[in-house]
Image (cartoon, rainbow, N blue to C red; front, top):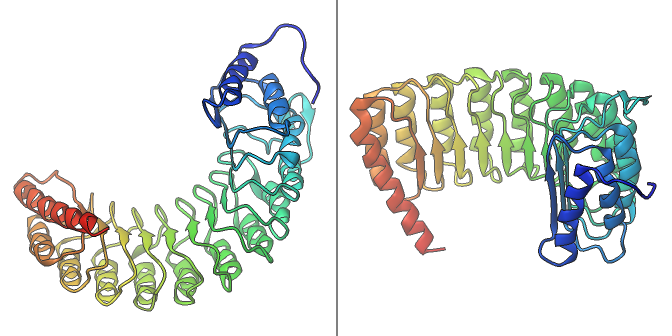
Length: 381
């Protein structure tokens, strides 16, 4: 990247001011969240991060006006940098084919980043949210996974990734043994893509968290997910929110939970689960001693589903967080949950909607019981 002379832009001045604080030891993080910052602001950042004695540990560049050309000039500094552990480059469209007045080969930005990560031995967390990577960019980026030995968290949310890109990610797992968290929320992954990802996860015990929120898969994909849970692949948190899972998919998941010994957090918010799916999950959790957090909010659970959950809470003391907000049960469901929580000593939070006036006192009673549980648990930690 060329050095700069002459009049400094607002973006350059903003970047320099933040870099001065880091150089003085007042901070170790650089964050620029500004939609009026352009490529030339990357120049002082490039030179600062290229210094052997650089003390910056976190870089967050979000919602800027950086082009692929600017990114191409800037990213080589991370190849030799030995201080930055977290790099967030979000909503900057490094996947654009026409950018900065120049036509780029699709995936150029991702390929340049992958080249850097092959030699970088410091970066632990990479966030590329909403960068228009598409399947081509993901295919380029994941080529570094088999050889990179430090990256632990990879976020590729909202990048127009389809089943093809999911397959490339699964292939990229290869011999990688360090990636513990993969976030693919807000993409276009369907049942086949979930199958490919799970196939890549099987046999890996290092991946602890998988985020698939708001994609395009159905309950049929739960056959694949269930295999990952039953095989004890290492998954501790699974986010399936905002997908069309339904009761049939929930029942498949429930069977896997009955044999689960690792999964601690399961997100099933807004997945069209009704009483049938809820009841089956509750039945299988009665003997589960591993799951700690379950999110069933924004579903179609009625009083019968609450009855099953209440019965489960009578024997399950490992669940500490249960979210049931915005469902379809009424006062009877609330009362059943109230009685169950009074005898449960483990539940520290039960999320409930307060829109039903007749249940206001019941909700307050439930909250008092869970708060008492939470206080007691905190005393012993």
